[in-house]
Length: 277
Image (cartoon, rainbow, N blue to C red; front, top):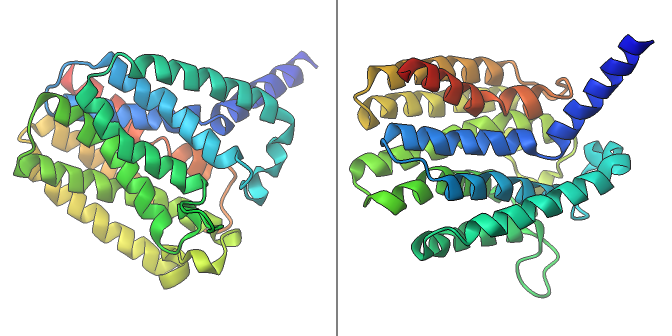
């Protein structure tokens, strides 16, 4: 009896961890820390926590602002707790924002607006938000993730060179591939007007497309860093994400994308951390 009770408690904690966007926030945090490793940047506590708490705030706002899809309806019982947690995260995000340099705050504006308009109709008289405009969904996610995890930390300490631009492209493509298993899963729920990549070219071609993009990121890796440990770490991540992408399907397990796929940046950060210590 106690065993079953403990399992139920652990399951509830795990579901809250996923549904409250802590897992995805850790993924964003991990990617930002990876950028700091790659360019030997000092740890920026304020920026890292803005990214972490801002991701929780942004994702929960998007998911629970009245436009949640059918696979979120089971969250109704815990929605109040998630709302309270999101409010606390928003307050903490605002606190750490006050510790950032004005220059960084200025660059935060476009990414914040994209997140807002992703969930809220952009212009007066329009009922569509950016999330529901064909082909835009995956690219907005990639732009925001790339901006927060690579552009922001680099503009604080250095000016962009060809190396940094290649790094931005790599991060952009990596996030797109990371998003493809979600789009494959959501084919059951997404309207055809969304025109996601799997809807346009089919699941198998989407996997091939993702493989090509991943291959490009691997090639770029050899240009952006001379560090063999970094290349080795990314090689491991490359194969993990490739396997997860190839095994993606429309009827996938509940936490395949939201936990396993989303964990790839965290795995990358952990592998990189162990390889350089």
